Image (cartoon, rainbow, N blue to C red; front, side, top):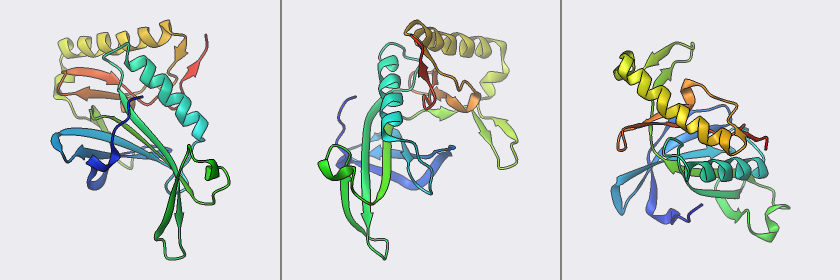
Length: 193
């Protein structure tokens, strides 16, 4: 995964664009180039967590597969750290995953996965009601395009010995720039050989 300088990135209005089982996804932009927007998946807040090893494995898998398919969300960078807070909640220290003292540090384990920003194709309210966000998907032509592009992503995944294991509309996105559908969220994907 490429290294991206975090100091040039900023959370956009600090509002989640998606709330997932183990994470929140925020919009970020590069303040040196405000046309570049990203999605930052933050894991480890409010008791929602996955192991560092599981995160690294899933993101390496997604990164590898996105290099082979334009229809898989691209992972740009991964940051893992423990945040040490004082009794008032102020940050005392941040210990990166690659530092020796990470394992023994008492703090909140935070994982941030920076990905290309694409739009959800559906929204779901707190009652489970689903709304289609792309009216184009009401046409036969667009449904065929959707099926072809996600099918191509699955072909790459399966040909490399992986199973995504979480195919659902919440994990399929629209990239306006490339005008393509993309598959994301490899959190429970598995290598089967």
